[in-house]
Image (cartoon, rainbow, N blue to C red; front, side, top):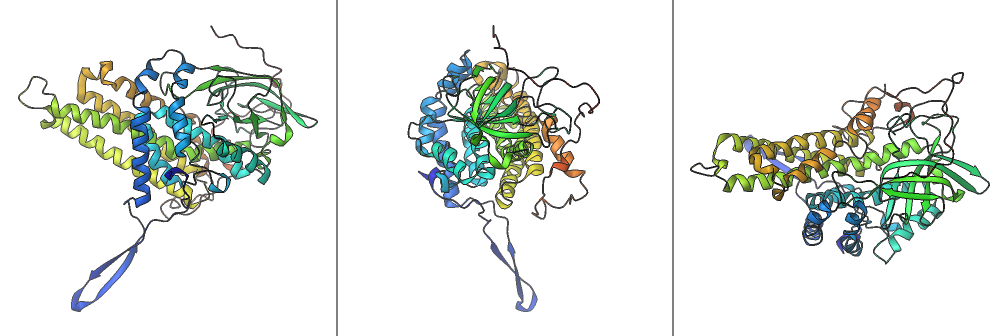
Length: 488
């Protein structure tokens, strides 16, 4: 299938020669490097993803959204997920060298828009497969790449799923936004991994990670977990990423019931002296778990952004259809009046602008080795917040009828409200990353315009965080084996 075919991750835009003739028959030409025309292959990707979403996801979305049990709701997507595996969608973002589809980031974003226009939650499920395995490609040894990525892509059951666990519970202390604070005894990230011989012993809790419970809340096939491997130093040096395989004793999973993206499975994880082979620590992430988090959310930035475009697109198309047929008791459909026409025109313009920002961010990642820590964050913040406004504007056009659940605007509003909050919150993590890069002395404000690399370093972290206690101040003890959490 097309998702499994090799496509260059560094495809450059086609160059078009433009000839301009002057006086006396003279002429000159220049090359245009920007072309928004999709290639034949990209158009095929777009249309195939659209067909998949309409055929396999659209019939499920209302049932999933109405299902009160979050695990049962996720399980309703299993047949669609099997089909996504069969078509190569589920691991399309991974390199062909290890069995993946080899899609460029631009091409992945094209497909993601079509899937998320029908079901943003399913798009998140596929996205998290990448968040769990791309760091292995970036930072793992050759053996780890073959063992983890190769196992995922070679699976023929159609049910292999990968989780990524960074976020931790809210409370005091708690949360994850302060994960990279340069604090003694750590700040924000409190799941610990203590080396004991040839194994790491893991204790603590994670909250919000997606896919991690698998299809039965007994664990995904693989979970990439950010852990504190050194409790004596702060988040810029004390964090690492370790892979945890399904069936590891000492781990329990509990579903979280969410108000949006009901088809994406979020969980709480409790680690109680879970033992994991030391060889599962992704080698290049040792003391660099902070960079894994920032790079992962840079990669997912344009995917979350295009998810916002997709939701707003669905709301816009439905509001436009409504405006062309609804008269509100007047002599003609309301589209013929100024307010609906102008509002929907503004919405259409914002959707187009946001889509091209996502393409730009994805292209930048392709050009710069999947590094775009600042631009990815900018894209995610800008698009998700602008699209939330677009969805509500569409509801204003439809009026009170948008609150009638049969018109589905309530779901679109919930989905769009979630987007600025998830995938690293726009305030908790995304804007802070932009701030950290921008304040650095080496930052060139024209770098993105000129398509130049913007390096992300540990020196750019820690800005806007709350410093932890000094060495001579009392510290919060490292977490012990976690008590089972009772959910009522």
